[in-house]
Length: 438
Image (cartoon, rainbow, N blue to C red; front, side):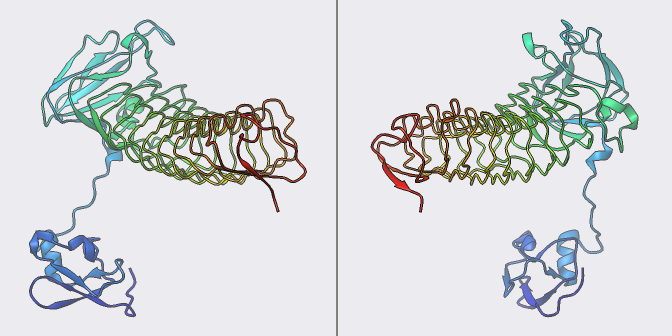
């Protein structure tokens, strides 16, 4: 890191001496990271740039001890898939006992506390791994898919123990040769591996390194994990059909969504991804400008704690791309801008239905509508009192069907001056003031 002598401040280490802060990195710790460290760092004086680092030797000693050295962060991609046990219990797993997709059994191996590898078969869940708090269980396998029959409780990993999951998921596919593997080939590779696994607490150190995804590869992977508080990093930029569909649905303890950097989407890729994550307060940024059919359908539906929606920059839409995206987000107060001017069938259908605290609709600049594009869009948005819609032709089948049913009894509707509207639930809300767009 280059020195920046134009910006110098000082740090007080509790010894009544102001130590200069410059841009010399000490253990990658910034000045603010050292506040109250062991009670020795009491204040940062005059610091306006947190990218400057303390260079005093005593700060180094505070962090590492005299003569110490930095400890590199752990590289979980080098580890087998691992369960770090938080409470006593058992682990069992199932694989399609009734042959919904394949009838053959799947064999994997596990190692407890770095002991010998022990083979287990997934036919009926009779193989039980008993674990205690502090145990570490590693897994490996050579199966190209682990798609499970989620019906009749044949649903992948079952545990009565609490645990965090870490390590590289590819050790289930490539055995000992998992490091560096980035390709998934089989349909529904990990569907739904941890479905309804209430013992799972954290997956933040789980590595999902694949850059080439198979269709529905992570679909419903953590569905119903009601105690999951953190998600793995999802760094893939090119998605596959349904790859993240339902991935975290009903994860009611999840508060923050992982970053979603993908710019190349596929059909249903985010379909229902966070549906009914009732404690989710922060949504992911969605940078893609080219969409696919159903790509964001129901993505945040039922997220009752979500207050702000991500930006939606696309200007050309696809079939049902935003359908029911925020349906039932009862605490959503601010809608995203909707700049699209080229619409498609059902693109905004039910998008904000049951958003009971939404007061202002986003401007709708499209002049040409499509089948069912705004159908039920603001259904039961009982506080909504402002809409600006610049459509010049509203005759397309079901384009505004029931779109303002049960909105506020008073409000303002701005329209194109040459467009004639009816009054009612499939038109301009009764009792609203009508203005022509200037």
